[in-house]
Length: 128
Figure 1: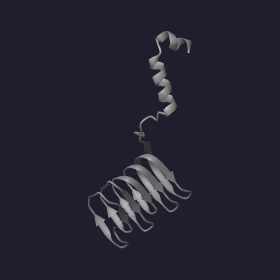
Figure 2: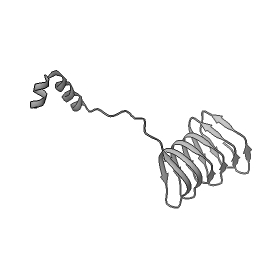
Figure 3: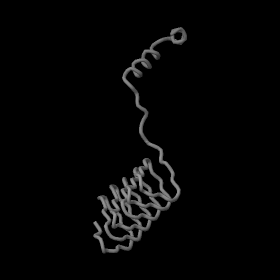
Figure 4: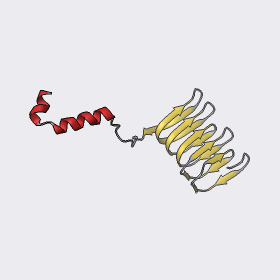
């Protein structure tokens, strides 16, 4: 956590959440979340699981989810799977949607039908 009134300059890499109430200039990489509060100001590139912005963020964002709440302002390039902008939130820049890497769902009934089709001869499949 960086408290209000504090300025941090440099790059940060961590496995935990990062809560910014002050000012940060640099790049941040986190395996968890970045939270920029209403008093927070971030300038630089971010790579995190989830980014929640109530303050100001200017830079590139690479995340699974970006949430810009009513008081939040984001400018720059973003690459996210999910983008949520509340009424009053602002985004200026370019966005790119990441593909979801989720496997295709197979339902139990579909699997049973596929197994029955394989068991039939080609002539039986044509008549079915």
